[in-house]
Amino acid sequence: ARDTLRALDHLCRVEGVHVLEETRVLGVDMNKDPIVVDTDRGQLLAERLVLTAGPWISNLVPSLASHTSVSRQHVGYFRLGGPARGMEVGAFPVWVYLGDAARGLFYGLPEFGRSGVKAALHSASGRSDDPDTSPGPDPEEIERVRRFLVAQLAVPVLEVVHRETCLYTNTSDEHFLIGSLPGHPNVVVGSACSGHGFKFGPLTGRLLAELLMEGRTSVPEFERVRESFALPVT
Image (cartoon, rainbow, N blue to C red):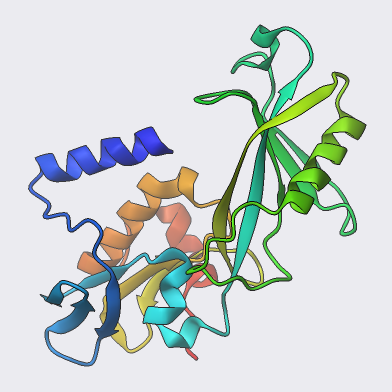
């Protein structure tokens, strides 16, 4: 993910995009013409606007507050017994455990970019976390993942070598929100990806750009199900 974001940032700058890093958006007035975006570095004016604010989307679009929730995910990186080569990409699988409601949905990936295989419990409902707080990984959640691995893997789980958190922005059906803001055709929103949005980043960017500029996309697969991703009217 880090390398992808760096590459996209580089491409944007090469194409002449003006990037404002470490700039906090305080609010958006979509009833003004042009649209007014208040930031901690002053105001920006826009004829068209794309909002991709992740867990902060309901701060900028209050009508989405009752349709989205934020959940902090707790991710562990585990050193396993066995040959190190067996933990690498191509040897160790990318896997998902589709358990019942009581056990939950666990997933894991091979060792890549840092020590240890990655594993976590996918949790897209049942909680609402504050994205402006940074409590750090919950030891109990990491231990829950460790116990699952101990029960399921054929090799021993030796230690937790790293812990981290990330934020999901969720909808009740775990679908994305991609579309124009009701009453504001010059504003489109891309958010609430419920934990599975990053891999679709290039496609989502294309959809948002085409919706904003043309009012529809050139992707027939999306157009057929477009209403499933539309923003709620209220």
